[in-house]
Length: 470
Image (cartoon, rainbow, N blue to C red; front, top):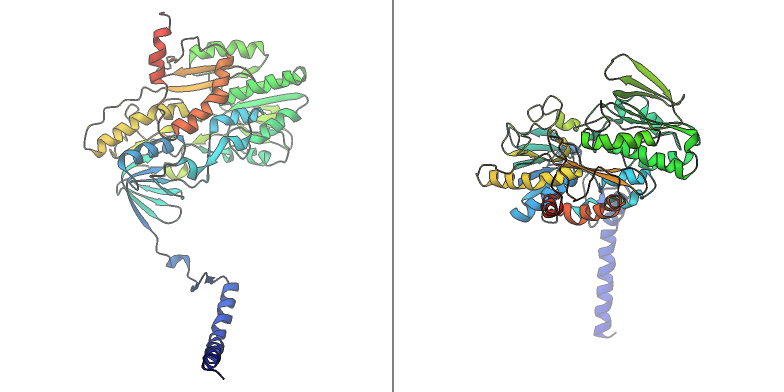
């Protein structure tokens, strides 16, 4: 036998011996893998959750909430402060463009057109912690998360938005769970597709629309879907068989008289019954009955039979926020100066959007107008300077009145019209509808969320030269 062949035999013999010693360990590894305790190349000992070492995070700015206000400010702040200085606390995978929900309810848009992945819209220079804030401790500059982590901050921005309280109306959630049912709502991605189904399914009877006795996102949305529904019924030839009722808990049709005076004639012309000071308090879906209470006469109830019910849920700041009494007012909203958006007690805390107790309409347009004010004032605090930027209460509500028309309402804290365009905006216009349907989504995704859009103040100034003097 040659020397080369003898060497190969010795190598093969050594390999067989090594495998025989290793085989029991390999069999044990396979068993552990079947039990879920084998990970990759490593054998891992099972541990209880109590043994896990929770993480502690430190940041210059903590943004709680990845909605439109939180996303825009995170973009501005991380661009200014640098990578890793900003943490965004947000548990959701998807970011919804909620102003589109009304159009989805009317069949003009699809749900999948209304969202993008959260990872794609949050700024890359900020750190995304995919957890929920569960406990605020402003005295120690910390927030505890749903994952058991603690985030310590120098500055806190609260941008949590509003919480939808469908559970506050007895019977409403059960009614919304009925497959192909008669109850719907544009306010949640979970239910918005039910709205167009209801519009198609109703043949005759009563179509009832509600507005709750609480602050809500976009105060115009509950009546937008009324106008869209009425137009749809006319287009499909069944309007004469359907009675439309709009029951609002408000004492007025719209909070700004300039636009309310223009909306009442539309309601009257289209034969839509409007009941003010009437709040939805219960849904008896087995009998198709909605129960309302008169706000101005407590204890006075109305039971109304429906063939279709569009329900707007009561809304509030999130429970996790309202539990922190140091941060919120009696109504549960973050207690800030309405001009600077700085907290009245904690000078390193700011709020933007719907969770603040500012007396403006809660819209994405309001958050856009607030964003440069909050940004500049937060930077001023970080640099030890006084806050100087002021928010004037600007809000905008594109009041869609059908499949081709829209009235663009713009106003400030005093409910005085603050209009951008050199035309009368208290009139229904096709141009405003196209802007709402096609242009505003682009503006939102491409300009607002990346932190470039600060509202239409500059446009208003430019267009002002074309406006006729009153």
